[in-house]
Image 1 (cartoon, rainbow, N blue to C red):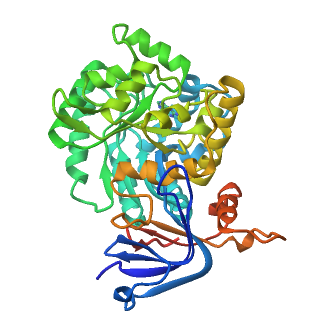
Image 2 (cartoon, rainbow, N blue to C red):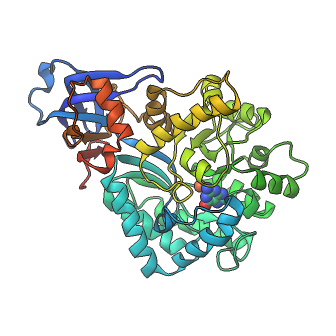
Image 3 (tube, protein in one colour):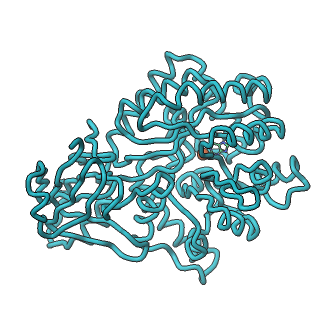
Length: 432
Ligand code: GUN
Ligand code: FE
């Protein structure tokens, strides 16, 4: 049996948002890439499997990055002085134009994939650029990495620099169909996702064509929604008759499931900082995922997404790095950012909205985003076996610490950037 083994160590996970689920010195069993559960005593039936004993190390589920731009990795940590629309025009579009050149793409995407491999992320929803050859190159590199991802060739036929704007809705759509046909059966772990950049960059003709493509091939959708005030005003100007931003995606059946026409389009929308009540209730009804990207929302001065409210309403939510709006590819960092911005929301905006607690944010980073990929995000029986083994001996302490303290400290102190011992995606070892 391929990808079958037992892992021993301190298993730390959240199977509900409200509490940690900790198993010191326990066994996690993986058969054919699927978890059989966590055991304090190894059941006899698994005794013959290879045993990987990680001693006193921490074993976490893999992190899920529900929103990241691969071509923006090259300028992460720079260009932090503007808000979204100016930041796109002045910094992001000129950088993305470079992916016309496959030599540049190979160098830059190589660095991105390498970084993802070395961190705690096992799964990601990735934006490429509008360029088909560079997108296929990125998919090839992702596949070779062993990580599991959705990758999108971006669609954008207006309101960007000339070099980055696709020539017409027809060309954008035709290229997308060619791209989907070229990649759909080529990879095991790297799947295409339909990626209209956001409403300001997509004409009605293009959106209509994407609707037809989605219906024909059934692939999921990712985009941006209600991120910044300037963007929302612009969408209102472009679509004065739509009651809210998300309704434009919904008009083209690119917004989750729609019972009226019996479609179920798996959809993730990044940000949702300023979503109105109507928008939130449609997202809830349609099962649209929110990719919460707190670092990006701070850097681009977008605002604070009210994640506590979304959690209470039962929305699907995961965390995203949103490189390069966010400056770090670490989802550990996104966990702490999510908690911190929720505390600012509580103190500065509305004291009736409780801040997030650590188990909730860890849950969003694993089970929350993992649900977009299926049964992903913990070691419960039947879940795909994504694991990160972390050695926290590099973080000295004079006092004795229990497992809950070690888990929280590992995340807050960025152990993913310091000491990852091993990493597995769907039971397959990733070469870090
Ligand atoms: N909205 C449209 N494009 C982008 C992007 O590249 N980054 C962010 N943060 N928001 C966007
Ligand atoms: Fe983004």
